[in-house]
Image (tube, rainbow, N blue to C red; front, top):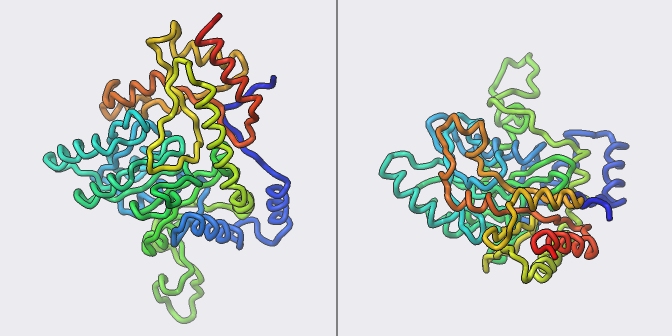
Length: 390
């Protein structure tokens, strides 16, 4: 059997046709397709506004800037995430700290957050922004986190890079009832792809306008924004803020719009694969993903935890044995503060104990919409032969 990656895109002929149509049009960028993609995602999420950009990392940075994060401020997030969830705070000159995870969901733990906030209030170092990450596609306990934001006065950016197509309390992730801004990723291994790309959705018209401005150099062509000049001067645009070139092209947006037509199909297939994994892995020395009752995960990732006390192997040995068999499992994630760059901020191993235990046991099995039952059976059989050798 051919090698099996942990994730991959599914590109249809309709997707290809949509991209070709843009290539044959008058607009490769800053045309009508980006707004169409924004409108499509906003409508799907039941959100009022959306801003498409060239990556979810850009969207996180832009969201932090729109919320006024800057030097002297704190951003808190989970350690069990991709580095962008924390780096966005550093980009703004803020300080970054981490809140330990819930050992069942692997998401930011509301109880740990509450304890840390109590101490931070006493120390006079409350966060300005908290970034809960919907790891693997399962939403965080946003109602609890939002209640704490009302008590302590911080803003919330949902990092939903894994989670478009999921739901929380019956509503689509991105609806914004419990956050200021939600960010999605459209990297090729995510639920849908635009090649590269990201999007920020919000219900706040000020944040929407601010993020649109920041996306394109801080330049506006809106006469309401522009300062008056002499009658004989031509000013059809003005830079009114220090922004960035974070624009998405119409080429990428065309792929995104086309992929949105199959979003629910992709998520349902991932749900079915997750259930098959749950059934096939019964009896093996692993912990399968626990699902929060109020959530509907889009299952970007399917993470198992090895019961290391029940096997005669290390996590690394299992990882390498699967790779040797052509099954390219991955690890999501190394705690952010364990990366060498973060050592300069004084973080040490053991800072978030639950995140460290998770890190020592976790493996992401292959999960993507085109994974076949036969391939999935092969993955589980290979894992079984490694964990329980005959």
